[in-house]
Length: 136
Image (cartoon, rainbow, N blue to C red; front, top):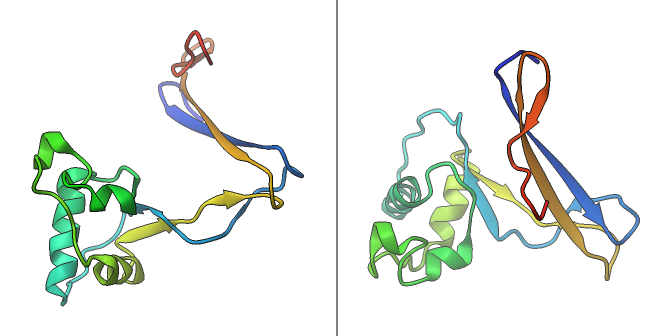
């Protein structure tokens, strides 16, 4: 760790045992920032990747956003962004390593899991919590 660097610290609280695992059906995805160029054969995969690049970049997204009329962003797509019949293309993008699947985090049945995150900046004499607000 060096002065001037930023860090994101994520913690996960649970009402269960406190042992959080990835499980269940995946609904969230994110483009792999360091994925190498992979030639795609499927036209639907190329189309979906172009939509993801334009709409989300490397930010996480969920499948239900792809199914909205705006495809996840009214500002970028207007009402012409809805992705249809995209699950095969999404699976293909995951299989080749361009998109990472982010399964939900669970604990024991009936418990709740929450994610918390703070962004820190290392200063010469202290650490500064950039994400701290009145409510957190």
